[in-house]
Image 1 (cartoon, rainbow, N blue to C red):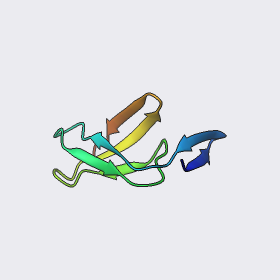
Image 2 (cartoon, helix red, strand yellow):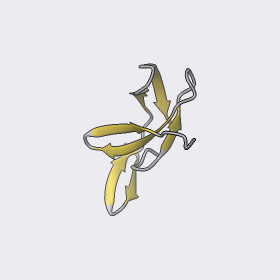
Image 3 (cartoon, rainbow, N blue to C red):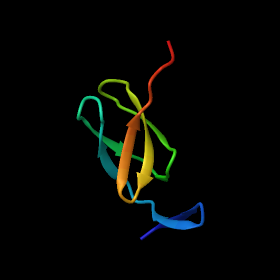
Length: 65
């Protein structure tokens, strides 16, 4: 198993899938996965951030208008 260090913690860096919080489409997360990583949904183009890895928490990023 490959791991990486982020903020002094060791994390698994194997690819995994998350569900877009806006359109519920599965999105692969490429290596490395870390808190603060921004992911763009390929289905609806919503950007969301990994807030926590354990437990996994995501948050949509709202565009300023």
